[in-house]
Image 1 (cartoon, rainbow, N blue to C red):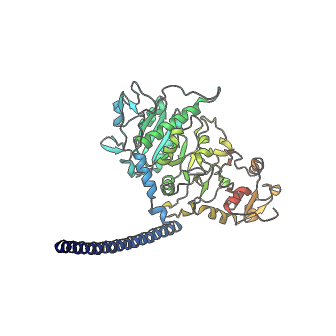
Image 2 (image 1 turned 90 degrees about the vertical axis):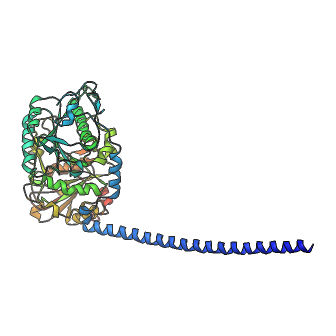
Image 3 (image 1 turned 180 degrees about the vertical axis):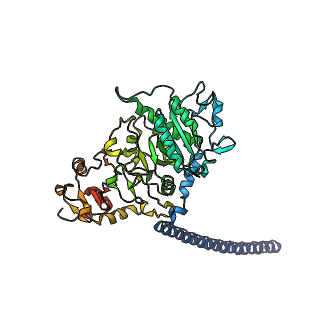
Length: 492
């Protein structure tokens, strides 16, 4: 009995010692865990501070305009990387060495399906395409080095194309890498093809339809369907196959301003950093000589003007799956495509449209296109602060401009009696609907037309133009002003 009791006592001692040892280890582990938790909390606090400092620094850059020239948003880079992984192939015939694969230059091989990416039974690869001629790189080398590809959309007007080619080359010296040049021909017009291939600085693309497009309504002009298909072809070729980050689209009846390329290089940064910008255009619908004054001033507009414009790859990825079958420009102006985004436009046009004859039958040419003023003044765009055009800044900027104007009643408008220049100040006139706007625009001679509920050039219902001098006329609408936080004087 004594031995059994002694053994039990020894075992109890061993168990108690083990318990004390485990308790000490548990306390040590809890202490270590507490220390780690504190360190983690400290790191989290440091991370929060760093994030707050980053946001503050970014806001400072936006307000100073530094963002425009120094930052490309991280999410833009991420989206571009994702887009590069999802590119599709496209049918194209061109003077690229790659195009020798499927039946020769300017031809399509058997079994070609439009937009299917198969030529002569071979699938064209994606990624950067480099074209060589006479032992040198053509098309600017890598697409990643380019500001934007520039494509002239041509069909059957060889004299117009020649004039456009000469204007582009006049202002393109030394810009092969930044702005690679392309001509995309719709159809097989021999004269256009010959002239395009004579232009050694351009890469030639050719779109040949597999079958005539099916029209929605009898009697429509089939040209608008073919134009839409041609645009889809060219944009697919340049974005999806050649991987350009941006594309500038020119028509074959345009002359360029001397600062055309500098203008687009400067505004390409805006396009990258501000997702509320749909596109950048070189055109002002109210850019006639009597309505413009300041060659350096740019605007945001809810109205997409087209006529020499730049878009980025992300927008094309959004639009391509649902691209219009016809009337692509009016389609792009619809709310479901625009999604509240605006286009950047200049006060003074950077392109001049000389196309009196074409698909639009010279519509509006003598009244609206012929008198357009093409900018001829030098502008140092690289030194311009364009941060006022950002979405975070522009509403306040527009309000500051509106405050310079004096309100006059619609009934008092008579341009034969008094002009803003004679008054010596800017004026503001209110309109209530499309009918009263048309009456008002008719008095001054600016565009009366609306598209998709938006007057040409308007931003939040505000249409602004000069009138025979430096002073401005603002057409305003109360709902649009309310969105800007601007109130008209009481009693008006």
